[in-house]
Length: 334
Length: 277
Image (cartoon, rainbow over all chains, first blue to last red; front, side):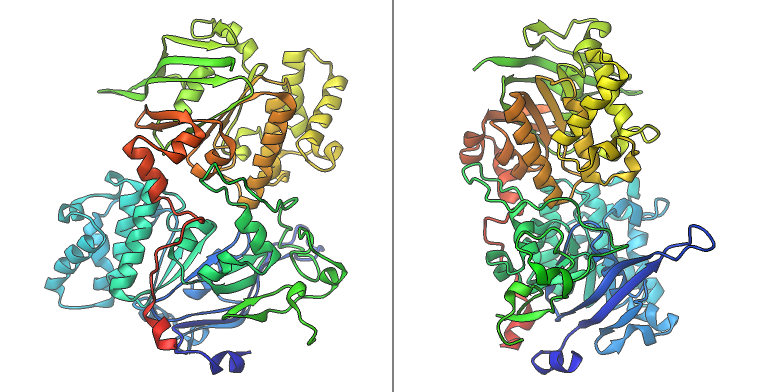
C-alpha cells in the first residue's frame, strides 16, 4: 500500500496509513466479554503542504478520533501517522511537544478552549513562550500582528474570554494556534457552534490565512456545505471507514459511492424553486460496537446486492485521483 | 386563505437588574390553515421567544405583551392560564430542538405519549396505549410495541425526535410549532424527519410554524417566510419572493454569505497543486 502510494505523489506533509482505533469498553460483569467499539477501521489519507483535506461524515463515524490520532493525542491501535516522514508513534513526549510547532489544532467550542481567567493576549502569546520562539520582548508585537491577521482590534489583547462572542473567541483560538506558524492545522468542527453569518466570516478567515501562510488544513466537519466551501480534496467517512476520497469539486459534482450520493442529496438547498431529488436513507447508522459484515453501508444502501453483505469492497481507483469503496464500481478485472 | 393564527404587535421582554431586554419587539405574523410559516434568524433573534410567548410558555422572568394573538377565532392573548392549558398540547403543540432533553428520562416513551392522550382526549390506560402504539407506527418507528416500553436513552436522536413528533401529534393539533426540530440531527436523519413532517402535514392538514436558522430547510418546507433579527421582523413574504427577490439588506447578506452546495465554491488554489502537475 505504502509503496504504491508513494510512487505518484509529491511530497506529503502528512500521511495516515491504515489507521485503526478500537476502544475497549469496561466489562459489564466480571465474566462477560469486553465489547469493542470499532471507531476507526483502516483509514488512510494524505495531506500535501498548503492544501485542505475535508473529512466529512455523520456523528459517530470516527472523524474526530481520526483527527485526534493525527495530532498525536490518541494512539492508533494499528497503522501509523507520518508527519514529514516521521512516524508519530516513535516520538518521545518531548518530541511530541516540539511537533506542536508544526501541527496545531482548533476545536468546536472556542470558549471552552480558552482559559477564562487569563487575558486573551497572554493566551495568544503563550505558545511563543513555551516554544521559546523569537526574542522575548518582540512577542507582544507578534501577538498584535496575529490579532490583526484574524481581524481583531489591538485592544482585544486585554479582554477576557467571557467578554467575547463565539465568533470572536474562535478568532482568538485561531490566532493562538497560528502564532507558532504551524504547517498543519487540524480543525475539528471549528464553525459548527457559530451562527451562520459568523460561520461565513470564520471560513473566509481560514481560507485567507491559508493563502497567506501556506498552512495545510485537516478540516473535520459534519457540514458538507462548509467543507465544500473550503476543501481542495475531501474524504467521506462512514462507520469508521473512508468510503470515498477525491478532489472536492469532482466528488460533489459526481459522487461515486451510494453513501456520498445520499449524503449530498440530503442537504436542503436554499432555493425554493428546486424540488429536492432526494435519496432517503432508512434508519440510523449501525453501532460501531457491532458493525455489519461486508460493506458497512449495505444495511442502509438502496442499491445493495448479495455480495455487499458478504464481501468487503476494497478502495479502488476510479480515475481523476479519486477513490471509492463500492462493489458497483468494480470492473470485470477482479 | 383562511388564517389560523394571527399575531399582532407581540413584545417579549425580560427584566434584568438594570435594564429591560426585548427578546421580541413588535412582532407580527400570521399563519394560514394548512400552511407552513418558516421563521428564520440567528441565535438571539427572538424566533424561539416569539413562539414560546404565543403558547404562553415565556419563562417566569419574562413578560409577554401583544395587541392580539388570535388562534382559530379565539384571542388567546387574554385567555386565563387554565383555558390556555386546554388548548396547549391539544390544538397547538410544540417540538423542540433537543429531543434527548425534551423527553423525561425517567419515564418510558409510551407513558409520555399516553399522558397527553389521557389528559386531552380522556382515554383510559388501555386505549391510550393502543393509540400511542399507532402514533409510533405513524412516525415510522420500527417495533412500536417494544419501543413503548423503552426509555429515551435507549433511543437514537432521530428516534427520539420521531417520538417527540408522535407526542406532539397525539391530539391532532391544528398548529405545530417546530423549534429547530432537526438542528441536533445528522443530515440523513434530518432528511427523514423533514420528509415525515411534510407527510403528516398532508395527512392531518395542520399548519406548521417552523423555526430554524437553516435557509435550506426553510426553502424546502415553508410556504411563507418571516426573517427575524435582534427581536424584530426584518422581512416577511412568500418563500419564492424572499429567496428570489429579497428586499432587506440582511436577508440578502444571509443568502449570499452562507456556504451552499448549488454555487461554485471560491477557488483556494493550493500551492502544491501546480507543483504536482
